[in-house]
Length: 298
Image 1 (tube, rainbow, N blue to C red):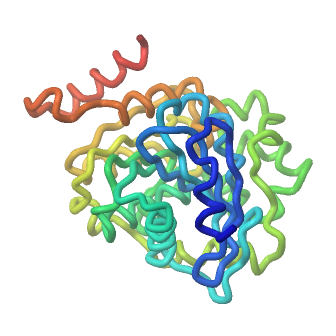
Image 2 (image 1 turned 120 degrees about the vertical axis):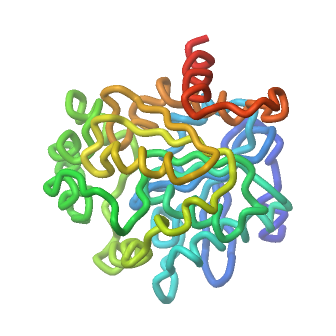
């Protein structure tokens, strides 16, 4: 069976499918789940596809497409480091391989930066955009310096060490239940080289000069207890992207999407299901936020 046929085999079933494909010199581990409009998922800096498993039950009715980032999980390390441009293009190549012309795109943390880059460089591939616990890179308002130092230290993700640092590093629910970090598939990089290859795309990168050019309907989700990417950065992104709305999770931390999926999953799903043609009357951002919050409580 060819790589493409293996990838497509069983995609219409509700079970999670895991496939290994060869793409542009990389062995890429891909996860496929569900049926419905396609939804491309970009994960965090050291997170593999299993990170999404707590969220998937809230994404019923969507066909989710996720992959281990190069050098993470079961995906191979590229010969040279990739930048944001090539990472965004990798996502479009996966969609091309699947025959998907356009997909909703959700990016969390580091993945949110990749999602922004994809929406800017390859807008025709993106339907709606969801940015969670992310940043616009350079010129962003820094968070807690100790939390950021732990976040950037590969040893912070070692078993035992991760549980000890989870609360101050990620905030939110993990402050009271640090043991949850062991269930979220955050893993220590295999080597310093693997870690460096993941950090390289962020060096010198910023989306601030062109966020205004992202015209997609965009949902921005942030916790107000995120030591890594403070809420002020999400407010700036919301102001810069013309057709966006901001959903703030009280007490939520950097990993709120994963450690509290019951609080965020329904909000994301409702946003993606909205029919933008159902109400042609333009809404202010305040009206959109109120509308989204009321629907999430139903």
